[in-house]
Length: 248
Image (cartoon, rainbow, N blue to C red; front, top):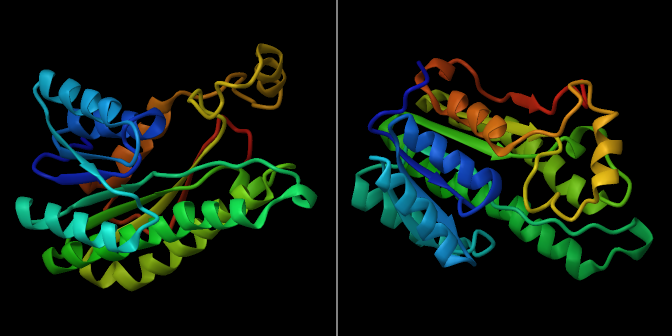
């Protein structure tokens, strides 16, 4: 169950954290995985080489999702070399925290370019191949703050909330070609983004999560594998919350 044998999967921002876990989980279930990165080539190659060492299939692809031309060229190349692109996990994202009164326009633009425009550009480019083949799975990586908000993260939350509207709209556009589009909203996950939190902060955070702990990247990867599978073929335009009950 939830196998993706023979599928070609692209995970943007796949060199670390949630992206890395998604690459590894999809490969374990049989997909050939393309590990995207824009910085950290060594980390991306480490992910791909680890997958190959365990008997899977993987390669790396360097491009910046904020550059639409680069996205188009990279996804066209992947589709031509492999004959298709079946699965897209639009995971690449950045975070800039700031109270609204101190928020800089440049930071807002950077967040929008990567988190929103980048994800939509990938869905547009990837959708061409998927619609030709009449099969595809697109997963947008949003966040729990998109739904519940968080002080100091107005801009970040806005970009992640935008992905929910995008996923629902694209789901309606692509559905006739058997291409599903969904979003995952992770809660607080132990990744580089939360590594700067103190132990006291993490303990305080755990008190507001009903399951009493922060999540791990594999929790999110499991949700993505499900949404990418044949078994999720009747699930589209949905938001899958993986947050330990932090937002219900």
